[in-house]
Length: 508
Image (cartoon, rainbow, N blue to C red; front, side, top):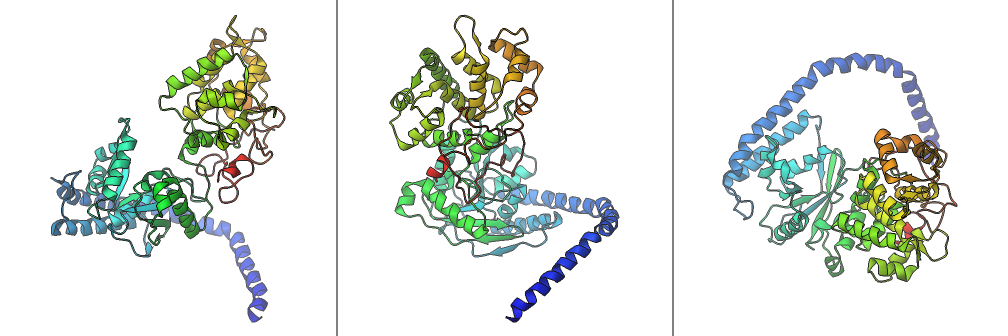
């Protein structure tokens, strides 16, 4: 009772303090501005030089410890290499101290390699996440080009990472096999530290974990980062079901890490971020249905390996149908997959009039955007090929609207200004060559002609206003021109722990 009686007084006192600080803002600004300027020319160069010196000092130790060491076989960690390990940890700690990371608390016990061969870290938010790596000297998974970086490349090679080669088409498979090999070595190899999100986020949620850390089906130790603290969570040992299903294993580990961080989770993935942030001329709206579509494509295994060849084949087959509507069974036959609940959800995205039929050309356009989001002209060329009339190779304004609505994943889009600008001779039709020339002359055509004309159409097309979204239904308005970002990609994240209304909810 006494405490409850004091709470209003405490709250009033805090409000008074903030009120005073707000009124003293100008004073603090005028006081600290010269201080910041002074530190910029005095303390900052000293810190920078110290950090650079520590990196230079670490290089000879890392170089000597790496000479003659095999990248494929395990060698005993002799006494002098253990000493080098300690020295490098001290040097790296001084380097981070010079960079402003003065105190970092480590909570929990780090497991031994034999207990948990893999450490999973989240969230991954910046380059400063290299701090846990230098503090533990654990191996990491990184691109092979990194070992050629002067100075830093030698330090990277010292921790014996798993290198991924972008030039090798089988690199992903080889990386997984190497992780599996090290994880099943019985603790002989150093622990592998993996950021399963696969990309940087703004720490507000955990996105879908990639399965690489969970395919070996060995115990993992989750590690959560909350600067200036690093927390080692208890070892997570997979069940028999999780060993057979790496995706389930990843989901359960992510749930534990999100709970420890006190943040929600979202089912959007690294690929979704790439799609939403692609630097194509058709920037995806905030609430595009293509994110839902991309998720279904991945889960149904419909994303082709030979993208160009498959898309051209689909385009030729769709053109021969000449706009003929397909039912669910015909759709399954076109894709050569069995009818399933997820395929029904995919079909529903294109069933715009709820008449149990769809235009397969829209599916091909959406697949082209998902597979090559930055290649706007290639997608439009494929779309024109499927929609153009045989006699003149042209399309109408209505057909252009269908193409662009599908490519953007929205329900309503006015293309009148764009079509009129391209069809300068007022023929009522445009060809791909005319479209291409116009785009070359107006590289920001989407900003100038689409987003401005549809600026008022800001409601979400699929996530919040209907239970069965459509990629091209004209009965709802829904596109957005803002570039609101949450650090992952435009603000399409669900509001609560990765669930949203509509189709997305069915798959969580």
